[in-house]
Length: 173
Image (cartoon, rainbow, N blue to C red; front, side, top):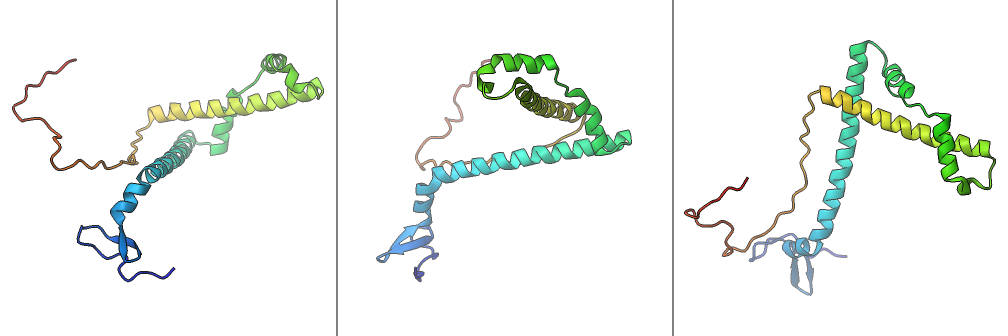
């Protein structure tokens, strides 16, 4: 589409025109009002992804620092603190098999138990790794400065937003 010469130029009402239809500008403020809630949801999703990635980076740094402190490799530390402690007993696998026997009706019991052990082992590994990272985090100084997305709320000019300075204040604890 051809770009209108007026697009992007400030208008008399103070908003920049982002498009024009038959000579009538569509203002950035109109676009923001129309897309606001969708963009807020997207910003929240971005924040959650960034928070998760930040948690992973923090965990990596804490594990590396602990490995260096102990004079072992990162892999050796994880083997000792996570893998060695994330064991699954045959009784646990057998109990889960008995609870969900109908799901494994089409395969031999030994195959089903192997699948269950693999699932339980992976879950135990993840749980133990998470607990280990929490232990390291509790002993470390971690400061998170990632800003939470904020949605600006416009308040009309004549709307009271604070009470009078002389208003009585009661603090309830």
